[in-house]
Length: 321
Picture 1 (cartoon, rainbow, N blue to C red):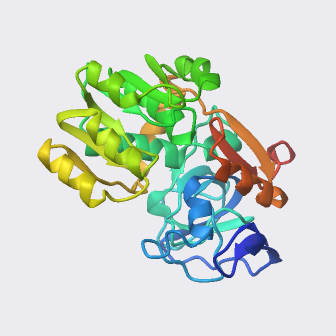
Picture 2 (cartoon, rainbow, N blue to C red; picture 1 turned 120 degrees about the vertical axis):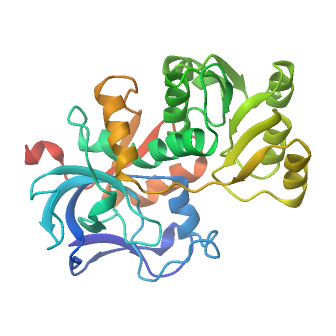
């Protein structure tokens, strides 16, 4: 099978296109023919070695956790899928992923993809949807009427999180560039903050502070997000753990905060599917590239200027219908 892999940490020059032996599945796994793979910032951070202490990988390694495709083979202990089923999932970071034609995955974390969506649209959803549901729901206990700030609202996680928070009855604030304001309002945001010209901390404090801030920028922005949250609020950060200064402020304000990493769960993917099929959540904006365009895809991913999600199309869907 064809795969794009890395054999060391580094820039985009470390990508290698190779024909490799297809993975052998264990009795609790399924083999998925990958049709599409969504890209996430964690991809270039792992490639660059920025997360090697938190998420070490074994080389050679195939990146790409957001995957949609078709079941090609089934392990002996798997009874809830059949060959040909259309599925999607978020593969754990330490496992080989979707920058390849085939992927082996534990069947327990796989769900049937939304029937109304293409493979490309489905591959944009797992990380964004799981992060939103678990960070806002499980971690932060989101409630109707609360004020929620979503950073980077035009990005992949932000695009889903705005819709999910609105679906849960919150008043939604978001930071994004001025040119993306109309986009985030279409997603359901109530207040769009131009991060280049406006101080989100002042705006949030003037509103009495946020109940929840979904922090996706890191660094000093994490500390400022805690400042923007009222006493007793929640600040899940999907980028890095809090530094000493941020943790001390959180303790002082009785704010629950920590580095948050999603868990791959079928039940949450099933919830995402229901929200998509009932049109509570709309599909994310996607830009599609081929597997051979991986260098250009990572360069755009690192720019942080993507509206919605970048998705690699591994198999052309129209050829297989």
